[in-house]
Amino acid sequence: MKKVLKNVSFVFLLLKMCVIFGQEMSAQKRILIDVGHGGKDSGAIGVNGIQEKDIVMNIANAILKLNNRLNKPLDIYLTRYNDTLISLSDRTKLAKTLNADLFVSLHCNHSDNPNVRGIEVYTSRKQGEYSEESVWLAFQLQDELNKKLDFESRGVKFANFQVLRETVDVCTSVLLELGFLSNVDESSYLNRRGNLKPLANQICKSLKERL
Image (cartoon, rainbow, N blue to C red; front, side, top):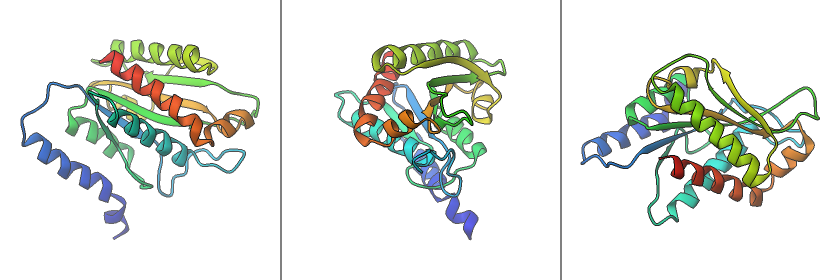
């Protein structure tokens, strides 16, 4: 029963996709935003007690809200729309089911050193069909978040994260680590909802410019 409940959101999205694919396909590029963690998996815990799963959900919701106000909104979907744990394999399966053009995974960072701060953008260490596009997008995102919002940039990095490894042959894919919850300043910044709007706006704007 618990397994059924845990996957309700994923099943709902798949049913929604069946409706979409039964209609005429749009030429518009499709973006899947992977909202990290969820449910019993809280992710990183901030120095002020905030949880990574909640912060990235708030950012994703802010992106959706801003996108809905655009004259020509992007075709954006989320891997989860509430506090539900979706398996990593189900997240990448959704990218394939959606035939996504772009996969962006949202996360926050943590370090034993409370002074560590800044944004990191990851792409897959595994070489795949969309490796070059993924690396190019990663550099663009970290550069714009640094210049437009003054976030300290820790650069573009390569990793073997499952969500990147399993999407590199499906679509352009990146993983954003949007600051360290172990850092007092960044944790406090991300905990204020008013600060999430410019962050969401810049991510949304950057994605629109790349598609």
